[in-house]
Length: 270
Image (cartoon, rainbow, N blue to C red):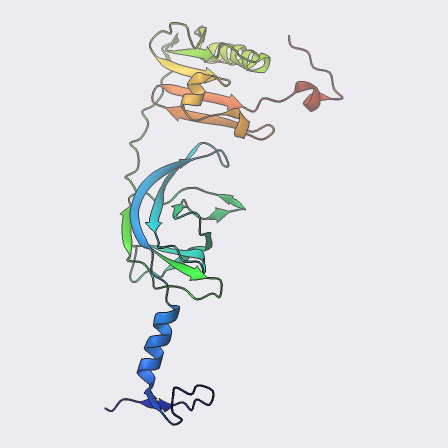
């Protein structure tokens, strides 16, 4: 086949004779070269475990994608796409269509649910990613080389927490040294209910005291609960967290003003 040619007649440029024939393929290649953007280079895809308190506690695995890109004055934003390598020919999905140019990284942590992040990707699943840079005009560069990453295996199941055996306590109720009045009251109330259920007398101790072997039942915020990633500052009014860990049960609720909640009713601790 011959080269397809397109004639352009230049009237204002004296350096080009009227009637000069320029191959169409050469024109297209030159136009692409002048407007093209260098593709970003993905440098790292690593699994991460994101935490939060939107729907309680630690949500599960996610992926962090990092890349580098040559700086260009007309670069405007990044576009990030990904897909789970499940099934036959999975389709690309936009993870970020207008990602800030100043942030050459992206945290992939699930989809939006009721306006809040679920922050959980499936365990033991391979994801493939690609990135490109986009100009203000909307024209994008070529896509980066595709990179894959795999979320971790699910954690082993937490062993059962045995707090009483044959009427004998095998757990200690633990409170912080700077315990609030509400948390202290909750600890004594829990102690009473456990005694009614099991027949045993459960001890209450501060977290900096020597604690007998067995399960720790953490009531209220303390350094021990913060070490588990549970903080009350991130909780809303009347929200609470129940967290199970190895040998530990944490019960933490939002610290609220009793006067603001109980008004106009009276409140008396007995």
